Image 1 (cartoon, rainbow, N blue to C red):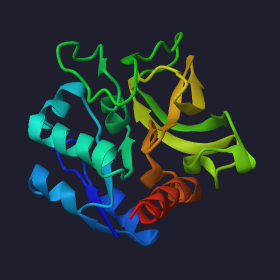
Image 2: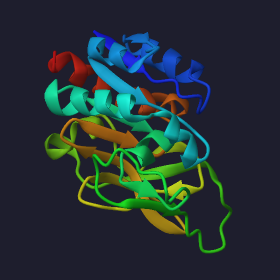
Image 3: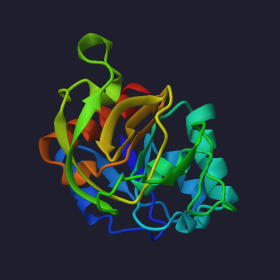
Image 4: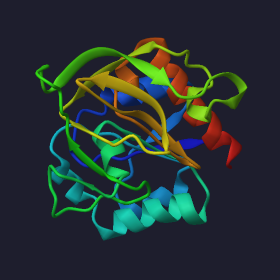
Length: 207
């Protein structure tokens, strides 16, 4: 079982790779888009400006879409990677996201609070227990996670947990095989490891 951790020069992958190792995943960094054919799951991490997602050009986008839509394998976006799952962001309005989730990301309307939003905040889950989405199965309501971001995704029907920092925004999304976390699971202790473990388990089930 192999998880592809995409490196598009949008952050240090070391902590993500270490966290995935802690939950039993075999991780590789694809050198070209065609390498994604060998992945049981794909993770798109990242921090920084939305324009860096432009590195994920047509071959990469096609390979990611084929992974989800044709091969029926899971995809997880982390922080900037979550925002890339949507149609785009006002941070770089000329640059589209991959469009697997509807809506556009926007600057956090923090109502006088500090932006970037950096630090620990709670996850307000929308469903719990046996009815919870897969990404939330082992995450209690009001669990804490670590955030560092200025832009946010809208709360849509794909949203399974929210966080509030001035405004309420999507903290976790899940639609079919597409998942995303606005926070950093790799820096969120046991809660983050539980989310990564759920993703790895799903990748195993889809083989």
